[in-house]
Amino acid sequence: MLEGINANSTDPNTQQYLAAPICLLYKNVRNKILPIAIQLGQNPDENPVFLPTDSQYDWMLAKIWVRSADFQHHQTISHLLRTHLITEVFGIAMYRQLPAANATGGGGHVQLVQKAMKTLTYRSFCFPDMIKSRGMDSTEDLPTYFYRDDGYKVWEATKRTSITAVRIPYKHMLAKLESAEKTTYDEHFIESPVKGAMERFRKQLAEISSIIKRRNEEKKLPYYNMSPDKIPNSVAV
Image (cartoon, rainbow, N blue to C red; front, side, top):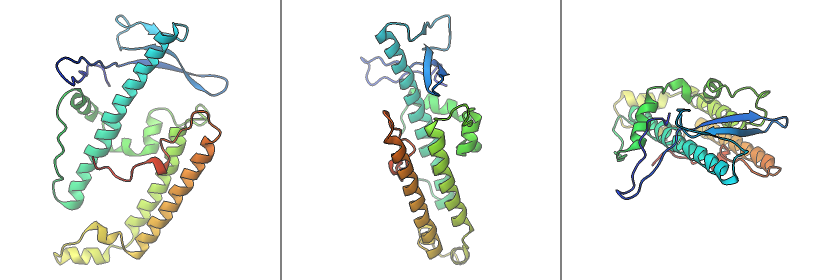
């Protein structure tokens, strides 16, 4: 995805760089996923392969470039495109008005968003489908993939609450719409049935957070990325 994307320039005198690496991962007998080979570009004729047997700092720098590339992908595609920009579409549908414009500027991140849009599908927003499309759904092959396991819990809790909220009758709100009176979705979400669903949702999220916290107490490197208490309750820039 990062191949061919131009790195941004913070100023004319500061050259920045962007890698499009290939990282080979290996699951050892302890079910640990470890990097065993890294190539910092897509063309093997122009990019050497770094190995754990290389010098300490060569291997460390190669891993840093992989993390940097993953960060660029996450911030620009997973965060900016798949959260902020896509949410604006639903904001327009819900409120029938254009949201305040947020300047995104230009540069490599715009190229990356445009490239990612070519393969973006609504199904990819369904967490289980996204995990399966990456071939990461097998708990037998990947028994310690916390992003998947924690994400499933959050997805199921959110899905149950969404279904409950959608099924609650909209008679009062529809009557106002038909009479051309102004109504908002906030009015709907203070109705007693929905308030009860939201309270159950908060308790489910708190329980998931507790489960993740207990698991992390035994880990040298805790994983909190998908813990509900660490997920911002907003998509506003």
